[in-house]
Image 1 (cartoon, rainbow, N blue to C red):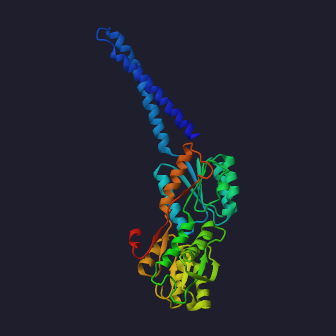
Image 2 (image 1 turned 90 degrees about the vertical axis):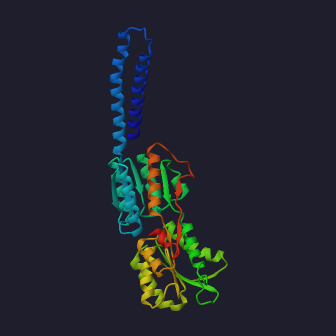
Image 3 (image 1 turned 135 degrees about the horizontal axis):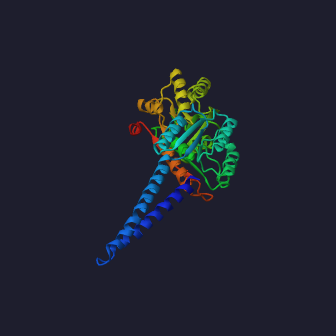
Length: 363
């Protein structure tokens, strides 16, 4: 409705300006024409000019007012998504939108209710970070039925799922890239991760939510980078940490007690779990970058500090601000009437490797 109103107002402006142009042409009558003939068009131009100004002001006010945007985040106490949602809110409010952000509390039913409430409130667009990737079909069907332009973020559905609705876009990063970069961080160490020199890299993997495609890809491609480089690997343990710092600490503590010096590399699907793992590594008397390697993903401020201090081997920047900007840009294109063909609905922002050599660039 908002876009139709803008179009109508713009047309009104053009018509008014057209009337002004007609009136102004009358002023170019020959000098010998009677003065009374020149005066009449000039008088008619005044109301046309006023109409144009009023229409232009209305359009400007409508644009400045923005629209109502609903944002659903899977849970507020996720460190990365906190950075992401704050960036989204700042960008949108800076553009004049009215923004409401909801905490899904890691409960898909709760988030479904929030989406339905936004639809009832007739928001202009939705930005959704799904609690569960497996809920994508239901979410897409719901927003499609309501005809609301929607941007999905951080948790990517399949191309087949998104193809069901042409006013739907996914904005995120290709998690395969982040996993590959984690493996490359290990390969860039002096011994390529083989600290004890036995010809293989023995590692533990602290995974996020295994249902999440990012967790799946980071887990797979971090190790694939090693094997593609010709390295032999040994998985000592793989445990679900649900992106949580405390769980990362608990898993690392248990594995360090069980496997001891066998562990050469600790892969973590995100920085929060890596920081938790670091606590256990230090408590066990191990020293990162000397007798064990530790990598994460996100480049959270806390992780950047640890990389700078030499307490993490590295991390991978998951550009929350860049993704927020891309999500808002995609949302505005949808609001402007753009639709997306199947296979063209994913917009990716590149990851970046963060090491002790370049960490200062990200602080």
